[in-house]
Amino acid sequence: MKAVILAGGLGTRLAEETSVRPKPMVEIGGRPILWHILKIYSAFGIHEFVVCCGYKGYLIKEYFANYFLHMSDVTFHMDHDNRMEVHQRKSEPWKVTVVDTGDLTQTGGRLARVRSYLGDEPFCFTYGDGVADIDIQALLDHHRQAGRCATLTAVQPPGRYGALHLIDGRVANFQEKPDGDNAWINGGFFVLEPSVFDLIDGDGCVFEADVLPELARRGELSAYCHRGFWQPMDTLRERNNLEALWESGSAPWKLWS
View 1 (tube, rainbow, N blue to C red):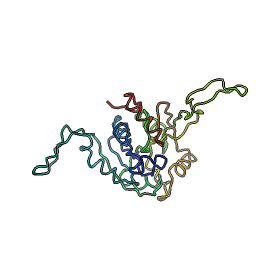
View 2 (cartoon, helix red, strand yellow):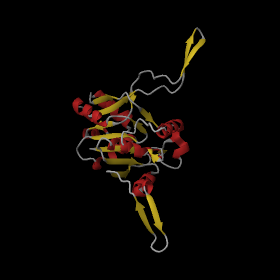
View 3 (cartoon, helix red, strand yellow):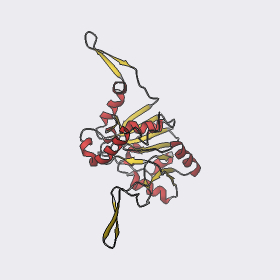
View 4 (cartoon, helix red, strand yellow):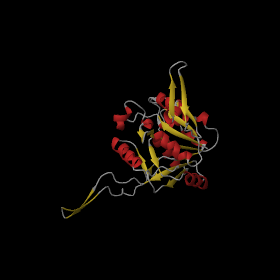
């Protein structure tokens, strides 16, 4: 099975980082968040990826082109033959196809542009800016049992702000970042059948606004409810929170050894 990663947006809400690189290349623990996402899938035996790039996509290509350079110790022989020697290569069992899907293409359009790389089998699909401790095998099993065209992962995000408990106009106590309002939202980590491509009409198609509602209307959209950790990286604060979790040595999404 292959996994498609959306990695072409502008990331305007994280402008402190994305003015110089695409959001999936923003680092957590010294590795791009894109690397973390690939590691999540790879932990469940999915090793083939198609990356839909756009804004500054050449940086994604350069990262994988120089993967050994980024991940290993090297010696540069600059005296005579200008040769590079790589030591203790840290490889991955990955096959990564990086596709330029256009700077302004919408999410559905990006997916349609990589159709030729996916064959006729179901595939995984997610955003290049969020991580979770999701059980990918359980997600795939749910999709097969549901027998629908598409499955999304539904999540319940935590509250973002502390709450006040008020009694008759008096502050009784504080609750730091309470749970959300129990609403389920789209957390990405989709499984899609190739028939979904029939609903995508051109580069302007927005997957979330055009494709998902139509699938729901047809009764062809299943939800896999994930009650564990899930965190997007939309803001600098969220990026710093992920960094702190990684540095603590207990990042919930680190499902690999």
